[in-house]
Image (cartoon, rainbow, N blue to C red; front, side):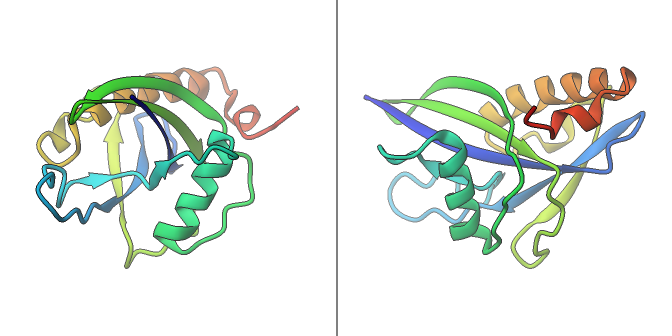
Amino acid sequence: MILPVSIVMFVKDIGPDGLSLWMQERIEEGPFNDLNGMMEFPGGKIESEESSEEAGRREVEEEVGVVVNNYLPLFKRHSYIRKDKTILLHVHFSNFKDLPLEKGSWFSFKYDKKSEHLKGKIPAVNHEFIDLFLGYIKKQYEAEFLERLWDRS
């Protein structure tokens, strides 16, 4: 069984040394609560009638309580196995910054150190795409290409 899931990474403070990403604490009850208390990005299952971008918007509104109308570029599709299911993760990102701090927090990342400072605090799979994302954004920053990331044309 393949479970399609969409998440949204919110990014701000992009600079020559790093950036900040917004995450929220996962509250998970029941017998499979291995991610309970971990910090992660808002997201969830993609419904059959939705695109991954639409699912990301819906999940952000449900989990965070904000409506994000700006473009959510797709960064990566990443598959992994969890609890005998294959998760196909659609990783979107956004420069939307007006997020409620009572629902989550901004975390700083340095391009050279990547996500290692959050080992044990975020799901293992998140390290993979966060570290790739940091490399990608660093290259875009150095090429002075950041503004084009948010443009649909």
